[in-house]
Image (tube, rainbow, N blue to C red; front, side):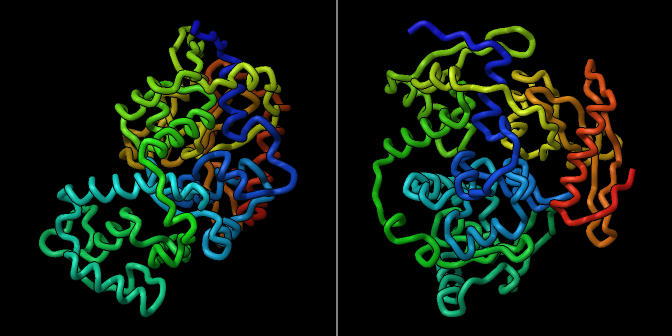
Length: 385
């Protein structure tokens, strides 16, 4: 099949539409539907304005509020928590297709030196016995200590054991208090009709690859693999080889070059249905799905972005936690803001326009409107510049 050429603007529109940023973030809120359409939402503990998972969801529908996600997990059991490329929440209905990821994580971390000091099988069974008898417990319910020199990422044996069993699918996140995870037995969290279903591994791979490509709109083998990080490159290559209805495409980059990729069989129908993205200006989270893959971001938008929170202050180009600013199908600037809920303030620490992007009064007015919406979201009333 001859590759379909997709120009850069169309590619950007398709990517933003696939990730829920092409329409205004208004209207009735269906939280589970947003997560299902994204595939997963990454969790992160850092709260500069709002934690990444809350900010990502709010950017898709600004009727979202922070307590809603934990309700969906702890009370409705509509989602579960596990590891994609990082800790994430996924729709509970995806559980049958996630069995291979439980196995992969169990096998991989069991072979690493990182987990060599965790509790042995007897110790892990003792943890499960306590949870079975007492209910969900956090790491604070246990008191083993790190032996020997304490490194930056050292963890006590019980914490490693809890994480190992969580990765393996023996334990599951029941809920979080703040950002503290409470573990429960998997059989008390995962519905039996989903937990017990047996799906061949090759069918799980087929579903994961197709679901990734559907949410990417188009992708290279590497991008398909990185989406869930639940299969390796060889498995993705094998899937591409045995899936004849994939459509080869060439994507025009922001630099005017052409990048080979694959798209779903419905790609031409999807392109025909595209509408220009909303012109609304949005302050995106650094961990937003649209910005997470830095190579794809640069290729499509010509936007060179990195997270510098782990970069020494003297070596930062921008700042500790800098938010990209999206308007329509362009990244028009960056902003560093910080919320202080006790002081009732949102402070603008720094602002940068992108090269070649003018900032007339009308664009500044859009930014001010978005800052006002962000203030309402986090519950502060004073903007400090």
